Length: 129
Image 1 (cartoon, rainbow, N blue to C red):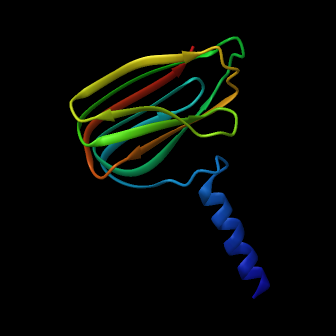
Image 2: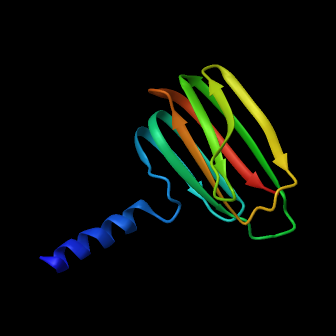
């Protein structure tokens, strides 16, 4: 019984990932990519929370550029680059966002995308440069 409990605990830890943030979402036609210095998420419909994971492969790069568009709904995007979750921006249906934050020592960046209900036709892009 102890072995089963230990196995369940290890599996739970593996599924939650290393970020410390829990993803829980439902989506229709969700396309995303995460990697060195870049991440994006595009969807037809999305509801919930998704975490994108960026690794800064060049320590001289200190600016996070981001763009977003959303047709319907509301999304708040947060960023964590030092263990603290901070609001980056909120976008409402029909809006576009294009901005950046710089002068920060980025090593590892988590971008947390949280919807307020069901959202439609979203495109979110992030790049460390």
